[in-house]
Amino acid sequence: MSNSVHVYDARADHATVTAESPLAYSFQRSGMPAPGEEGRAVVSERAFLGHLILRGGAIVLDEALREVLGIGLPGRPNSLTVDADGQRSVQWLSPDEWLLIVPGDEIFGLETRLRAHLGGSHVAIVDVSAGQTLIELSGEAAHEVLMKSTVYDVDPHAFTVGKGVTTLFAKTNVILRRPDEARWELIVRRSFADYVYRWLLDAGEEYGIGVARESRHEPQ
Amino acid sequence: MFHIYCPYCEELREEEEFHPKGQAHIARPEEPDACSDEEWGDYLFFRDNPRGIHHEMWLHAVGCRKFFNITRNTVSYEILETYRMGEQPTVGAEHLAREEKTASVQAAEGGQQTVGASDAALASVKGAQA
Image 1 (cartoon, rainbow over the protein chains, first blue to last red):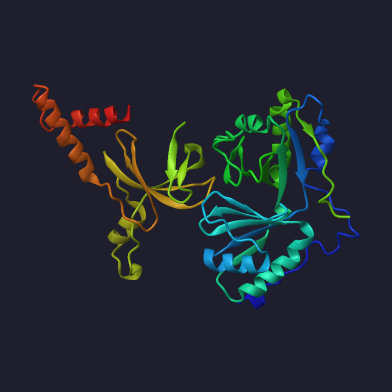
Image 2 (tube, chains in turn green, red; image 1 turned 135 degrees about the horizontal axis):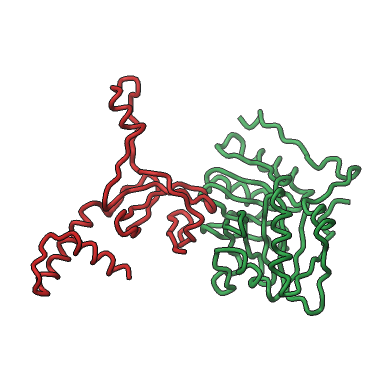
């Protein structure tokens, strides 16, 4: 069954073709206030990561993922597993659905190896990298910006490191997660990225929000 | 602003994340071709609209996107339990009857003879909520 699935490298020509991140337009149109000394919140986009949706049975997927990537599926609902260097993560989305995020240049190889390992198992793997983007929020007031924006309890004591939920953010939905003490990650549909970005700038104004441009994950 | 327990996320989530999806536990006739029009029409169109305990399907639309069941009191809007698809409710119509009975006993103890008064049951449900 898996033989009939066509897997192709959507980034094969990244060396020759310049790509623009989902927020490229927003940066130009809405501006990028630089993080000031007084600023208590910083936004940055981590574009061009590889996003993979895994669906199927937890046991078979967990086994394949441990073999291929070295990290397992999170065992509990609303939780997140991050690998040792913080570059790769798996998040629980629903009882049979997980979101895997890896550096952009690894996604094709990973999907190929996962498919090879899973063989004919009853699973679905979908590359959604082009459909969503990751916005990172940091700074001491990051959770205060979130409190203004989401119905979920984002008190740092309640929303502990390693937690991740799908919830409402302003008038759209977002996958919100906390990979470590300092950072919050928002995964949004790329068509809603501009809305979320402008909302964050507006909500974060009182905390002196700034935008840091991150280049380490962008293609050459 | 109130919270609903999602049996898949295993935590209380904001009501805005959920959508009601109508009556639960409706079984599709095993042999649709062998059904009478009346049976098929009942299955397709006719829904209960009880005053009291109602078993409903809800969808955690912004969240795990799974359907689950809620047992709800349509009079007081109290949610009595939530449970996964495929499971059976543990709270049924007899729950209200029990409440009513308890309420009448209490009323009798207070010196008022209001046996079987459903308003008393209602008050006790509201009292439990407050």
